[in-house]
Length: 109
Image (cartoon, rainbow, N blue to C red; front, side, top):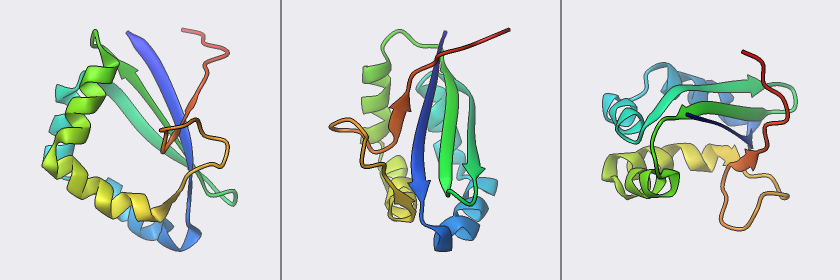
C-alpha cells in the first residue's frame, strides 16, 4: 500500500458547488476510483486560503497504469470537465500535474 497526497487551489465562488458535487458523487466515479485500486480517499478544504488537500491509499501494482485507466474513462472525463474549471492549480506544480503531488514527511500508525 502506498499513501499519496495532493493539493490544488479552488476558486472561492465555486466552493459551495464543489461541496455539493462531492456530497453526492456519481456512482460511476466512486466505482472507477475503487476499480483503479484507490482506497480511503478523502478531500479536505482549507479556507480562507481556498486549498483542497486530497489523500488516498493506493493498493495496486502500477499507479501510472491505473491513473491512465481512470483518465481514459468517459464518465471520469465528464466529471473532470465539471470540476476542473472550479480549481486553480498551483504555479509551483510539476510539469504535467493538475493537482500538485505532495511528499510524505511523517507518518504514525
